[in-house]
Length: 377
Image: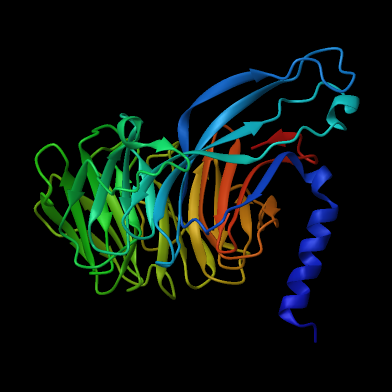
């Protein structure tokens, strides 16, 4: 019987030997401390390298920005980081494709943080506003335009724009409202789901739901601005409406084990995906919640993250794999990213690029190519 660690190493080496056939873009870097969170920041810069390595034409690339955080376990000051990623332009010929352009994740700005950054989420309407979860119950809100300083700055004073107090324990669940920049939804390990209005004050405006155990994730419906959902270690999926004074609709045993993550489909008003400790990703129709429309099985350990990438679904797991799913007739994933060697802590997708971070300090930015289908994600 093959030792699991040895088997994982063999699979990683097989993946490494096939990288050039699998990706349009693959950028890897190792952080000093692991990041529990990753999010794309808005905006894309265009950059020209000029003529390089006998190219007859300049290679134009793009610069994207990432939000990261540190988890130093109290050994050093923790920070919220803003990083730049230079993404090489698409090659126009095999000759250009064979020329490697160096790229890395370059941290440029920092914001001192109180304790590790469990989660950081960017307000979609006010893109310099970032909310974070930490080791305590409080939620911090920063204006990175005003508060971020160059990497290595000697200013280590922790001074958030707002401190939202209500949770009594830490948590991971955090989601900005898709159309109202003052509203924020959170879930904590104190079993509560809270709604915040950061203009009205620093206390929750209402409790939107109560689980029987830790709340692991929360999300807003992308088009119906009153609908939200939460999942927790009690295996429940709660669907609520901010207009209603009634308790949220509860689906018990949404997973056989803890329900750990969820995401509404941005292209369909009725589809919702969840991931659980039972190693599965379940896709449900809000009109018929009880029975999943798809049960996606690939991960060998708990599913820690789910994100929609247009019509496709991306899942990350404690097995270190990131799977890409097509909800057609195919049973398994259409692609598996095998570059991580630790638990997938978080992932995000924007403009065809996936950013993923793991417990082994790795941050990776990648864009797969589906050669057999001639399609990209």
